[in-house]
Length: 352
Image 1 (tube, rainbow, N blue to C red):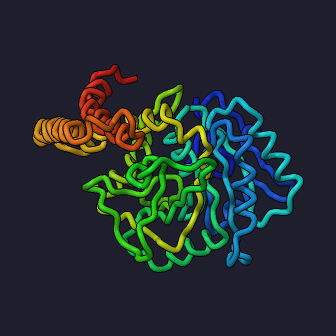
Image 2: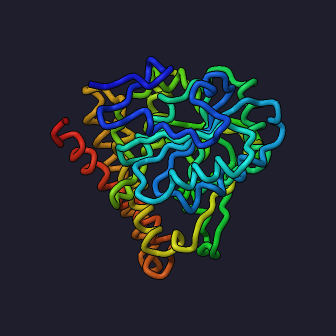
């Protein structure tokens, strides 16, 4: 029997959860204090003990929000390191301008962690940061300003810059979006969900009401887990929101830096990542498609992906093996073609 989370009648804990697992990381904070917050910043993390404090340090240095009552909720996504202890120590040893809380999510995958964050929040808007994303000092104040201007907007994201430990390969800009880098200029504009041009969850601001009304509680694409590199888990809720009539926007005044260690620029990782970005394409394209339209969309995705794969290989076949960026592009197109078969596998697997 599921049990109610204290002071949140709409949030349930599963049978194996306990109230004690809702970790209050500061002596001056209680879970009830979160009810009065104006905005929540959520950080999903898996084994982030060595990364999470850097993010918290950057949040501690936010400017222009000195009078704001806000919370940082870290979602521990089934970590097996010292993440929780690190958070407790950090909360007890630092004077923080925000309330710091940690909540558990045992289902592996960032999509499940984000769902837990939305469910647990009290505030109208929830900001998301990955545990390797370092927000610049005006990030939160810029988000608060943009919230005042938005109309029918469910999600917006800002600029994500790369902070590299090693020099990226030549022509890296062609594949930098696979590492969640977004630098789309200095003018605010709508994203284009129909073409899968969308902001990554590494730096989101989400209207909670819109998410709860439009996004299924159980995602199709759970995110990277147990060695899987299949992407698309952050695009899935945005597509649901778009189909429900909400808009997705780009806010150029919000800046964060994505810390990218040298191993994430190595060939094996980048090729696997690129293939994983392709493998979700058909699943994303088929979301919300009617039974009548389904076969046509499926055929268009499959044949279109095959066409792009053949065109890319014919054009660059003599250089692919010696050019990492071309190799990654080829892996993406290959993954995109096989995404049709991955989609069928998802549809045919037994429903639990």
